Length: 220
Image: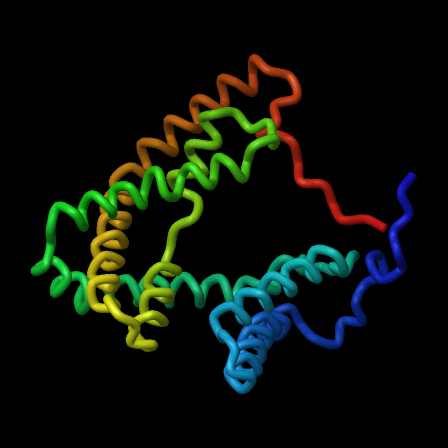
């Protein structure tokens, strides 16, 4: 029998309600970003590392026996992030994508297609090698998994540094992100339903399906 440390099982004192605990994550992200900027580092990477560390700590030392689950600590940050992402895509489509389309060429379209398929899906497949996940799952993760506004953020960092070719790079990123929004949006419902049917059928016919294996809790 695995024994847990006292920090992992002792419930919190209840001094802070779950509504105010949701500020923790924003404070960690803001502090990480600010400290990185002061130290002439990357605020973007620092905020990402801060969120990663916060998520690990939340899973590792989550309090037990509370009426409101500790997972709700990230609710506000997730909702705010979703809203910010939606607004960012709106601004992206209204301001950045239109001018980039004026310089559209077959080379940009070709790279965008390769970026959404080979350039992204092959590394995902390699990273999942040995995970025993079925090919449909690997393909589904590769197509829908690593996407978002990261490309826009990284492109803006390059534009700010005024490196050679930054204008062309910004246009290529805009075309790629625009194509991603279009293709992923069109295929989301259909592929999700198809994968759901495959998973249901395979799980019924296969014992110990890797996709059904729960993520183990961190224990000491």
